[in-house]
Image (cartoon, rainbow over all chains, first blue to last red; front, side):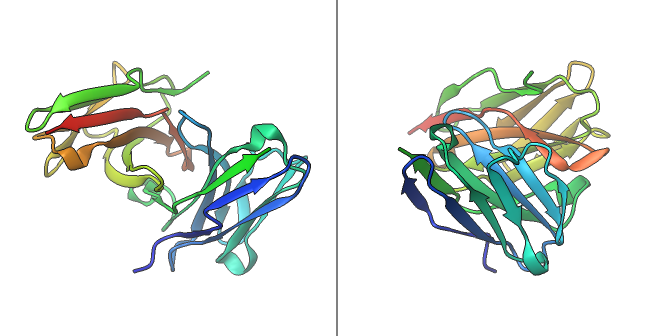
Length: 116
Length: 113
């Protein structure tokens, strides 16, 4: 069974440029998450989708970040314009649902973003 | 205010011995706890979990203990193997917001042959 697939693996951009990340979750997983992980820290939730609906985007900096999950499958996360402080690893994860054992998330390999 | 804390950034143990990784939390609403393992350049991988209705959960060499009164949990690995060398993250969630897991900053475990 294929795991969570993310692309690209690495991205280097200049500040003020836009960038987009793509995620394909595990088939059948209704819940999709985008996390940001800064160096030396744990993942922090940016946004959570239940099917196509963004049910928790309270931590998403909406002035420059946007996300979508069309047809309840693949998802993209966009930053426009990028700032130096956005340099981090962006992780996508999926799970069957939420609550109890469904909380267990499967993570992709992440996209390491460097803003210069 | 960090709600999930892993106070030891690193831990080094000898192969065959026990590894004990600790995690403290402050939010009394947390009722489900998870441990993830992460190798370099990979995403975290789920390892083991425990519900607040239990105080222990065991899976092979891995055991998680939960002390609700102390708001403390620990992961025991016995015996430790060099392949266990990784970063271990503790995470917690509340059934009132089951989709949101709050992670600690991780503990880097090194198991020496």
